[in-house]
View (spheres, helix red, strand yellow):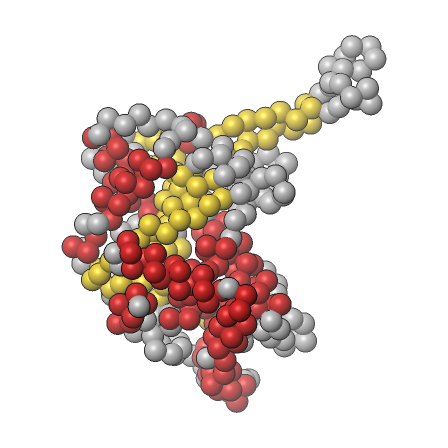
Length: 336
Ligand SMILES: [Zn+2]
């Protein structure tokens, strides 16, 4: 089984101290509808950053940025939906059920152990899912659409009875469908089940940013899975390498850009990464697909409950340590 090939880079069980086992993943995120990475209607501009276009091409271009938070928050929420449905979210000290973005994480559920938490003044659990900002391959001006929303009068038109045009309510920028972001994800000292849980969250999450039934649809594709003792090159480095490669092939760098050309260029770049310091192996395409099938099986209805309960149970010894050590600083699993 392909997960066995990753065994040297996985933890046999959860433990407090990091031991340098690193799984790196390359994720291609493609918008499938208009997408908005900011609070709708606030008028803030879409997040973009001036960076070097390629590694060889040193011109500066603005690239769209999908921030860490925009990636992780919806993926955590996805996993937590299933923890909730199997009663695996624990009760926080406030006697309320574990909730994201509150001051009262339960510190005991799968999500808290894996993605970490910061508890008010009382230490914290570091996240073992490391993300970084993902960048668009193309120039951001190619990728942003702009729409002005006008008030409609009771007549159902944009003009009142006297023929006056309605005033614009607001201007809304959005990311066009078919925009590609390349992303690197790092898992530190995770167990096989934690790897399945994180991958499941990524593969099952389909909405990002400002979410409605109409916007924010995104597809995630895992292009590469690596094992080693160090992080992969950064997502910026990847996007720049891909940009150089596409340019060298005289590919027109304009939107809409063919996903296949992008995937091929990315595969060419990442196939050389096992030469990088601390990156020891890459799963072959067949092994990667086998691992994804394994993840799908664990999340399937017949197996989901057993899988999530087993994962939840794996933290039981640490919960005990914590409750015995509660009140004493530096004890239990917070003592990193
Ligand atoms: Zn929790």
